[in-house]
Image (cartoon, rainbow, N blue to C red):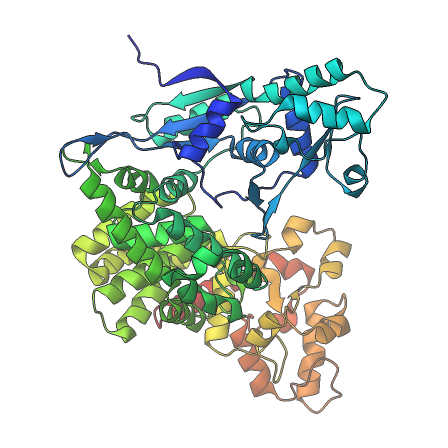
Length: 598
């Protein structure tokens, strides 16, 4: 006989609001700031008043945790879905403030017209209109005398029936007795099942990540400061994108300003050179993997619940320990020195702009590795070497492109077991053999998108070598990247199109090059055997037509920088396929040389 994974009960609005006020349901304060428009709050109240369904609220029971004295604590229910509705009820019916996306605390007041039995968001006009009750939260307290309110209303509105108004106001207050369905998920079901139930029940089918569940667990635990830790993670991520939010936090969150976290994250607001803009998923992955030596966030949820993996019980001591370790991991992540040194390492490998980062997961694990090796006390020079090598290897092999958490878990465990030097060497032997460099990588570059990770690594190699732009005498590739220079075609696009070459063929990685726009404009739609010979002519004393390179040695060096075949002067449409094949192999060799010098 199968055991039900959840139970469904009907509870009154008053019951649900009481649970929230008493802390029986944990609402992560800023897990999802209140994003509903005031009109949607009005519509929710209108639906309840008219007896229309308003959907289910989903909560996930906490495990019964063994306390130090041997007793058990059931803990709180964690709100999985329905936060916006509950917050809407609290602000409209109780007069509570909500936290907006700008971290401001504001009330949303809903007005009611007893005459028309109509709801509206309070505004200036309503405030001056005696036919409206401008804030329904004033009607809801138990000790409010509806007879007195009815008489006061009728004294201002002579054209109404007092008995009808009283019944209408009584029905309005009766919203608190209307029912909402609550789905309570059992404590012992796993995250995957919770997610599946959520998607099947929720009409919108919005997916929840394991990081969402982890953040709910963190925010719901006030005993070990999880609610404040949750704010720290959220604020740091927001500040990395928008420094203006700092002022809003400073003005609106007095409690958070008193914590150690506030001073530890404030530096990020002034750090303009942001290559790595983390989301809370990134912070959790890095902090968890580097400290716990595990990669699956479902394990973090279990540990924060007090899971003892050996005895399969739940213990308070594990909850406390897990929160302390996670806190250390988060502090290491947001540490200014760690953060800046890590990004300096990535940039020193040639990845100097956000446009060059093709995988956030790969960057996450590189930061995991940095924090792990630093904690091991490894020499900074060796840390830099291993982090750069691991990052580039991971990009080239697409290591974290699928099932990243499983790969995180495998990698951190093996690194911890074997040491980074041996594990990296073993990985290189397995994935970066001669066959990869000579066959695999050239074949992988048979692509038509300049966002390809292989092209980004190639550009990083050019940055690392201080290569100049194609046909440029002084402008560096890194200048073109930073200034968001365009990617151009060695075989001009218009030339290829005129010769019947389709888009996927003329937009090949091996046909891409970073070049100054003015040089590209001058080349226009000329065949390589035309414009290259004109450049050779300008290197032999002729008039400058393309850039300022004026001698053959510089031209040949520039060709080498860009992996241009030396017989390029002979290439026209018939040699296009040959050109692509040759250049792919030259690009692969350039990447190989770059990699083993890291």
